[in-house]
Image (cartoon, helix red, strand yellow):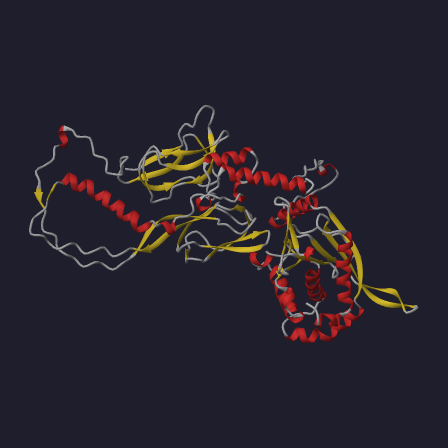
Length: 549
């Protein structure tokens, strides 16, 4: 018999709550008082225990849903069990008198049938972790339809995050029975995006045991009670394994710890747990909060910027609104964070790249044969990599919480790329160990992947310095914002011919304007000037590239 479990009365004036996590799955054998969902009300985060027992046949809620008192949560089916997990004995009445025992016929061994495909129940597909600092993205493509049969690891949908477009693979093979998102929706980590019916090969049943010399006495009542239990037990064992179950909790923390995090304004999803299995304790939440306050205080504040109250622009004419893309939203947040927490200084200088342009045109064909393009950016990359080795404070990060400077021994350099989706920064790794030709080939490939939205998340992580080259567009100078947690960024504007006084006369020279922004907490003005001049001199002597780095 099926039984429906509804959200019970939660207390005075509490009518609803938000589902933080679902603690059970379809196919689980549920006992009374076992927690089934974790619910956040306006007063606390609580676990809701079940008042029914049996095998879960359906779950009607998912993470993020808001449910009201009396709303169905799940349905259980099969044999009801008591607190010890044993079949519950029916009440005895006069009509329940057991009939006389009968002798069971000797069992006959039968061959096992071949395995066949069988359904093992629905499986929720949740959006998994996408990488450090990524809490979700915009759905830009649905790759399947309801009713489709999918293989394990087959792409289900395309998601645009702040660092590119990624595919969400199917966690297992099965048939799509429901889609919970559509193109244009924003999906967050842990959100239900699809449901599929898992299909697997049923194991061949064991052959019936050989007949024994002594017949077995049994009763119809005992047989009727044993059969459902055996069926329910075998179904559960065959269809649900720990490896198949989705993560029940995105964050391992007790309700009291979650409540503390919410009360003091800490995002528990980014707290590092120090307990067993990275479980988060109250001490972890408090330490994280303290470090945040120390960092903000040391960095000059600016943890948040109040929004500007806007007038009704339609009073003066026609307007059109467009929502932020995911890339634009994250870029805006990080630019505000960097500009308010880092004391910026911008240094300006110009490099005479007349000879460099001759060098570039002379060797451009050779690089093209290798599959790349010898651009000014490729040459700047090589010079900057060498400069970072000479001035290690520019290849560092500041840890204000621990009051220390982290010097990076690698030279991975990010290149700001203008795309239709917004500003992205892929990273060229170990630039100091590569030739100009190798850098040019990799830069060409990476720029193409970024503009077409196929750059991987890993390709945009690990940078220690950034270059933003706007020379192909125009401008004479600009003040780039440091890409935190880096401490410096180089901006390049359009080169132009200028008269330069050399050996008693003015000569036309191609000058490249450069703007260096840096974190004044670590880098002094004199060091900024020396670093930028070193880069300029490297570009002014192109054959230096063959001997340095």
